[in-house]
Amino acid sequence: MNRAKGVLTIAHSRPKYLKQAVNLARSIRLRTPDVPLAVATDLDPAAFEGLYEHVIPWDFSRWPGVVCKLDSYAMSPFETTLFVDADCLAVRSVQLVFDYFAGQDFAVFGKNEVTMRFFRSPARIRAVVPSPTYPIFNGGLYYFTKSPQAERIFANAKALFKIYSELDLAFIYHLSSDRKGIESVEPLISLAMAKAGLKATDDPRLDVMFVPEPPLFRMEMDILAGECSFVRRGRMVRPVLPHFVGLSDSTYVYLRETLRLEAAFRARGFSRWRDGVARARACTMFVLSRLRARCRAGQLRSFR
Image (tube, rainbow, N blue to C red; front, side, top):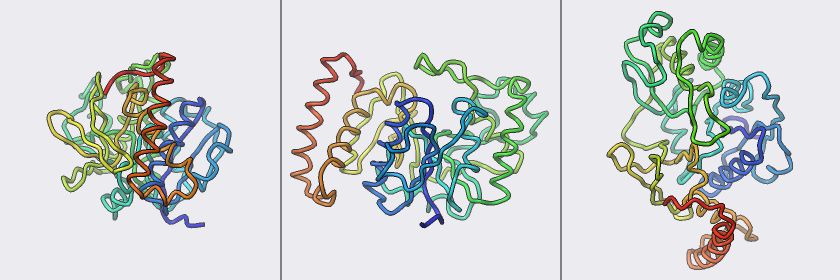
């Protein structure tokens, strides 16, 4: 089995994350059918059959919540890994992202600034990890190789986690009631990168990952057509991997597009979905019936 490169995600603790991992895999299969996929999970492995080549049983008790991503290096079966949060969808080929980061041992998509919102005490941060700038990025994506440098990044981030409170790092407050006041991985990785002299990658050739802006999460998306766009901080972006973090994975757009994916993968012989007319007709009927049912049940958020 090819282990040269692949995509890794995590699905643990709750069925919700299993469903997200299934949706992510379907979206990647649509545009990049040959890339190997791996999922680290403590849920039913049978749910991932036919979508993930590697289903990795994992004990998540050591690193709670989202901090379990610090084990990504140990989890990955690949020499080159693109870690992607399960609440993302791939609109275009993830090969674009592999090419974007090629040649680096560890990389994130973002900017580099003097400080960031996770650092409530910049003076304390500079005393521990002095650096002119620090990487600012979306923690839903990490690129790394099996290399001493990448291994050190994760090891240093774990060491910094032990003094999270001493560093006066901010906690994340999610809109969802079950994820309030949790530690964040981003400041730990940012500090570990700064310590190693690494910077975030921000190349205008490609919009890799962005989150629709709350509270409305407005976006235009047709995953079967490979289209996604929305305004992020005053600029139109077209991300390869839109990140539906927080409540945005419960919104109309996410539900509609994942139902379209489900409809496509229910069909026998996926290649026939290349016929746009047949695909559109079948997907529209399936999606509308499911969305009506969710509306009647009061389960659908009306955000567009």
